[in-house]
Length: 155
Image 1 (cartoon, rainbow, N blue to C red):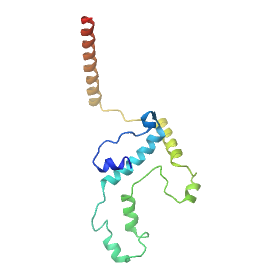
Image 2: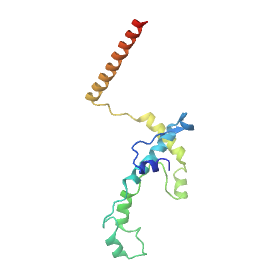
Image 3: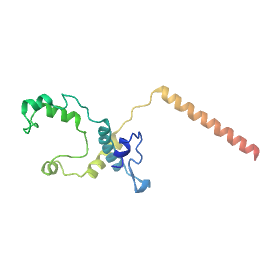
Image 4: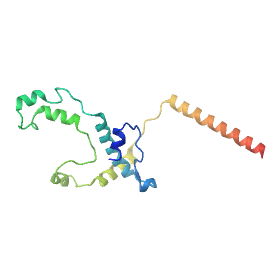
């Protein structure tokens, strides 16, 4: 809730991802969990599209009110695109969850964090971006050198 409300109010930055103990401690596991939550918040902020196709007007007419819509192709098609997609939160019934190892969210997130840390290979920055960063660094270093020389002169 502490990320959903500011997002719905229009905030474009949510602070505190991966932080524990008022930001004194950082957790890779918590960061992975917070990433999952951020994806769900982002989906909510997108809102709900409304049109005849999404509202299943024709399907409702065909099947009839109060009948089974879960078996309808339309329901499966739009549930896949409209429901938030999670990687770590297991929405299966307990029996199916247990058959797949019964890992809680912290266990699944810890495994995912370790996998990312061990295997992720970030794409290199484009050369123009690297050149711009290098020029910013060199400019700052020159300013610091100049300030240090002035400080040494004034002694």
